[in-house]
Amino acid sequence: MDPRRNRFLAALKGTPHDRPPVWLMRQAGRYLPGYRELRKAHSFWDVCHSPELATQAALEPLARFKLDAAITFSDILIVLNALGLDVTFGPGEGPRIGHPLRTSSDLASWNTRNVMERLAFMPKAVAHLAKTLDGSHGLLGFAGAPFTLFCYAVEGGGSDDFRKARVLLHQEPELAKKALDTLADIVLELTLAQAEAGADAVQLFDTWGGLLSREEYETFCVPALQRIFDALQKKGVPSLLFARGGMHLLPILGHTHASGFSLDWRMDFAETRKLYPNHVLQGNLDPLFLLAGEGVVRDETKKLLSAMKSFPSEKNIVNLGHGIVPETPPEAVAAMCDEVAASAR
Ligand code: 1CP
Image (cartoon, rainbow, N blue to C red; front, side):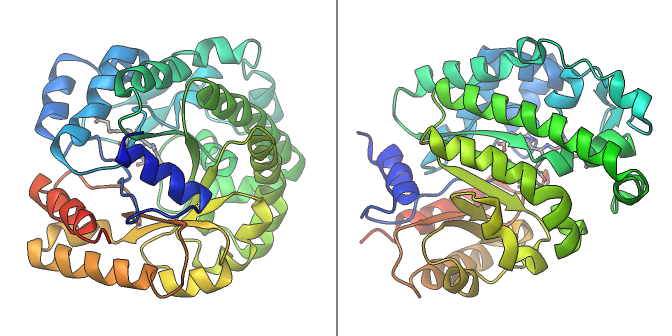
């Protein structure tokens, strides 16, 4: 097997390998010239819906940098679109949701019938990428965690604090739980379909999970996540949970039954390792280090690699603590990947 995919699979299993594998959240995106060219000719949704274009976007970072895994090009908001919430992206802005969730009649209008048919393009993108890679790299599928999808569905777009969504949890807990369960059903089917299409692992993005208290996370998020991760585990699919801003959630993240966690840049890698000696841990350089000059990138990458060695574990994956930002110079990404590659024993 190609050493890159082998390293990725070994880190997921915890079997010996030469160095931690590396991939980066949002490794395909606007910081890359090829992606910007692609987006001049095609809308964001067109790229997501075409397995060929999605594969083209996903391959660009692999051709440029020493990465060990690819992530399928798509978006977490495809689920809301498939439910009929009408998600659009204005030029240079965040998403807008045409039919936000506020009442039980909004929820009743969600088009759940045959929803997987409207999402089939995503597992198809996974399958096309898997076939093109032909085992050269590890391959990740992904989806939004139910709560993060709920945040966008209720708020109607991006936000810093998702007030409407957090109020609704408490004002209409039954409605909220029903919505979260519906989202969890779809996320489970979607991630299973991605694994069947060739994804080696799936990551759930709970980008807004850290807005909740530990008690809220336990009540509203853990049951649905547990259901998803248990089902994935039963099928032998490794899973990663990224709970951004979830420093206070670390003690209970294990309750979700994910096989690993992708750490936010504010989490301490070595401390988290002590808490979770047997989980896969991924992370967690601050993506803004990539804007601070090559010296900083190399030093911080070395520091992360040595924090990973502070505990004897084969279950480490190098990544960022959140996605690459559009202003990132590609040379900084190259320096980070080169530094990881140079650490091979
Ligand atoms: O070309 C463009 O203008 C679109 C920009 C863009 C890209 C490149 C969006 C819109 N999504 C993506 C791809 C994407 N999104 C990937 C696959 C590629 C990769 O990682 O290489 C993934 C995994 C996501 C996941 C995603 N989308 C998350 C979770 C991770 C995170 O960044 O926190 C979230 C919250 C979204 C929603 C979303 N989609 C796009 C934007 C700009 C946003 C953020 C909206 C906001 O809250 O303001």
